[in-house]
Length: 400
Image 1 (cartoon, rainbow, N blue to C red):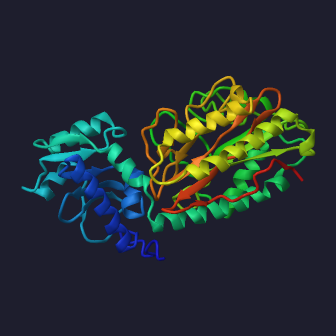
Image 2: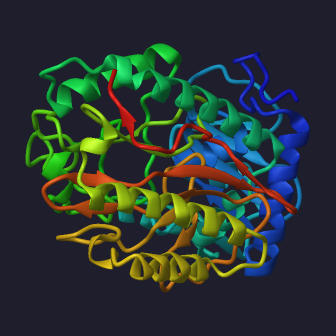
């Protein structure tokens, strides 16, 4: 399948059929929400609609031509391209065709920008389009799936090299730097898009030993103290030693669509790890097997959480499930252009699994004195089966 045009002078790099299908899905959701038009300003949503990031807005009316209001870069071409220096020029282009109701990404757009756009569209009822866009993007088409498969394949390859990247005497941050280098050389974009303004992360986490039990200010499955209070998550300089686990949860964005994967490593034979560590890791694998069976269209997302928690209790591991000192509020999430898309696998989630969802499941455990265990893999939900996009070995892997 042709995914994108190679003519980078064109504004819309997506294949025409892909672009049109995404716009029509968006319009169907707008119709249901009572929006006469939508003005997209967020980079992730602009990338979804065009295949590129630019400074400007995408104006999607319920019917008629999509208009791309561009400020930078210069000299982009295509139907509907209009260059503007300020939002007020949008009204000049639309003239008398101003909408009666307008969707804006109110969850993420700056207050000052919203107030300015309200004046531009002074007669329009303003509605929040952020949930609508998240719902539309949660269902991936074939073009997105192809990019996800490419990212997954590259991420699996990089993880296969990790045992040889470790050198005796390394700290967690030294190992992470080597993994980052290998990832970038393989084509990782380095960009870790996260929805919302309360989470920050640099290319992922490497957590050794008890650092995995250090609480983070973010709702991550694992924490870590980090190297500085300005970024209090992840590797903290812990020396990697025999008897501790090393959890690797690194960036999988090689195409603009990212996969998410966690695997566990250790120094020396796996048999040297405490029995409870090995038991918890096997429990995580068991949870994956059970939840994959439940990843079928129509299943309530919260049912997956309930089953995972039930298994953890059966195994006597609930105290360590999804954290020890501080527990995460979810065990899985959608992935795609951003790392935290819909659906959310959480106890109070209202999401329903749908065909086209891409879900990262990460049932993890923190065992005090030893570290974190458990795997994370990314799955694509087809109408009649589930595809593992990150099919890497699941057992604890000794460093070479």
